[in-house]
Image 1 (cartoon, rainbow, N blue to C red):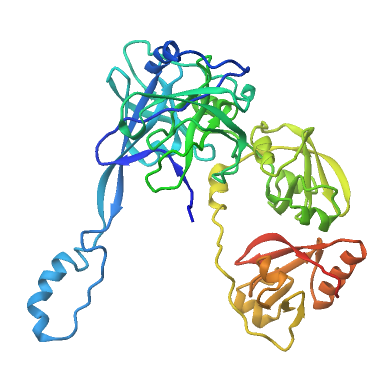
Image 2: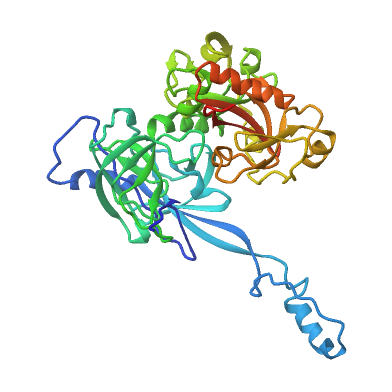
Amino acid sequence: MLKFRLILVSLAISTAIPASALISFPAIAQEHPASFADLVEKLSPAVVNISTTQKIKTGNMMGNMQFQFPDNPEMEPFRDFFERFAGPQGMQPMEQDVQSLGSGFIIDASGYVITNNHVVDEAFEITVTLTDNTKYKAKIIGRDKKTDLALLKIEAKKDLPFVNLGDSDAMRVGDWVIAIGNPFGLGGSVTQGIISARQRSINSGPLDDFLQTDAPINRGNSGGPLFNTKGEVIGINSAIFSPSMGGGSVGIGFAIPTSLAKPVISQLKEFGRTHRGWLGVKIQEVSEEIADSVGLEKAAGALVLEVSKDSPADKAGIVAGDIITNYDGKEITEMRYLPRMVAETKEGKTVPITFWHKNASKTTQITIKELDEKADEAQNNVDDNNGDKQRNSPEGENLLGMDVAPLSAQLRAKLRLDDKKNGLVVLDVMNNSEAAKRGLQRGDVIIDVNNEPLKSVADLKDAFAKARKAGRKFALLKISRKNEEAFLTLPLGDKK
């Protein structure tokens, strides 16, 4: 079966190769022009190549193999050789300079350049090359990992050619676009295509909102501009889907829309970093099954998984299990829209927020704080390993394909849980049961069902019975695994 990969389209090589650009379309439906030549001639001088040098640690030529000599006098003559070339000293990782490249574009005459964060990440030397082969050393003004954007600055003794940022929100599926760049280091190349889709999520981060294009995009295109037929930048190339490790184009490329990029670039230019709003919640998508389990009419909004202590959400009375359905007057049709709405809210602004809480809709006012980016990154490491496996216990009882039991002192010790964590531990899961299909594993702790906390097996039976009586087809379980929490649904069936 052919498998597609998501590839960040910067190019890593041993020698500098020019980067590439993207293609964009007009805001109003237009006929295909007879030629893009005049537009290309005007825009090309502002599209630049970005080459970087990074230091990476690599193993030595022995491949980091470990050697241990037996206690044998016959091996003594060889010991010195192996200790020198493959022993502890020879096995130390080596640092190697690696060059990579991407694309970028100049946005004003003074020399500000936009590119992707992953193009310049960890770089200690950055060179920007113009179309006339003039080279400049660049410094990083600011970077933003969440949107994969970076702002650079080059110093020239003259005004530099530049392009303007346009309105990506005005772009429609089917609009023409053009790309100018250097895919695979082939030199100034121009391609054309259309906008294939808008508001694409490719699971690259919390602020996913990509333009999709069928314009040929390949390795070396990262950070390049996506132009509409007015000559305005409406996107910054970032990634492609490709069936090969080489990253060849199959007509599925993604660009960061300027509607998302403009405020980020403005903040990087002014402060050297971003200032984002913070609500203080971890969220997950609301499926039809989750909506059914909590009595919500449709699958929309953002399910609150966790609320940070003393956060704006905490002070507003939002708790885990609530579903945020409206933020600042805007309906949350999909979970992924909420992070961007909050991020673009200024610190100190008070906004109305509507959420579904225990079978009723509530609205309150909430004052947004500023996100601590470093603290936020530290919390993003999720452990996906299975919980400690437990043997069946006489105290366990099978419900819906899983053996559960109260958290005893012995089980707490095995699972390394503190006394504050309450619920039922999953001792075993039957093969091919609904519990297994939904991802429940031995060692998971079921904290609550339909927002009702559990202390005994009787509580779990009670929760299932109440859900059935209310006409629900699914129960909403909050589970803890390796101290990470998540929600999942479990079909109730007709049996108790």
